[in-house]
Amino acid sequence: MPKLFAGLAAIILLGGCTAGTKSPDPTDALMQRYAGDVPGASLLVLKDGKPVVRRGYGLANLEDGERATPATNYRLASVSKQFTAAAILLLAENGRLDLDDPVRRWLPSLPETTAAVTLRQLLDHTGGLVDYEELIPPGTTEQLSDNDVLRMLSATPKTYFAPGSAYRYSNTGYVLLGLVVERASGISLPLYLQQRIFRPLHMDHTLMYVRGGPEVDNRAYGYSEQDGGWTRTDQSVTSATLGDGGIYSSIDDLAKWDAALYDDRLLSAASRELAFGAHVKVTDEPYEASYGYGWRITGDTLWHSGESIGFRNVIVRWPKQRLTVILLSNRNDPEPYRTALAIAQPYLQ
Image (cartoon, rainbow, N blue to C red; front, side, top):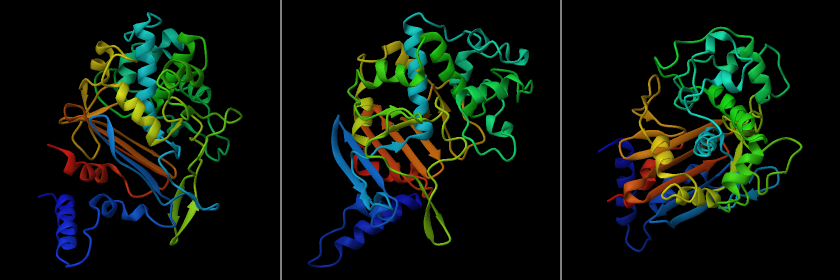
């Protein structure tokens, strides 16, 4: 038995051995680090489309003492990538672009060395483009925009490998995909997502956050543990890019997103098959997986994590069993993927 699940079994067994005491909730036991007056988390377990666990733990805002609830909105970080990918797929369905378009068709300022890179290769991280974080000038304090990323890439002829020849996880690729959405649709990425995904699905409290735009309701702020205490670390110079990680959402709104991934209400069956297809094997990451379009595939699961300064999130779906676990947290540790897998165990057939 894996150590994580053995530990869970030990907790349950220990709780059942003391006469006259109530066995501890195994989910609460696994979420114990998030409980109390510390940066917290919101947890949702969906089985057959219904919430069987829907809870908040700890605090969304330490300074004001605001509790985390199912309505708390967290910065999703890279969990946002599945929405950027869905936007590209919707535009392809509508004939506004083709997945095999060279990215330079839409972003012609990119260097000639990227001439063979296609949108499809950006979606599954096989484009070979340089990580934009490597290009940030030392001493930069202003937050980067997606257009800043494009300008840096346009001045950088280097690539990591020939497009389509290897896998390397690329925030750069998804920033560029967000810009392609804007060029192909004629409107901003935040507005496109609002009009074509969030509003139709009644994800009424979800948005792609832009400074000066609508504020985030029920916002969780990010924290990092430093010197035995918690320090607010909500933003960094890379926290304002959009296509790779700019969405804020709650577990309640993500339940609506999860439901839409089972039928044709948003994406066609063909588009969902593309999104969930194992296009390339993930390499140089600490788990076995393949990559679709904004999704990792491991066994029967579709999942993606999201890590940004002060936030750690994960969504894990078992579509054949109609089971989903979503764990959003406003802290730099722990990494929630294995916790989500452990929480799912009692509900797996």
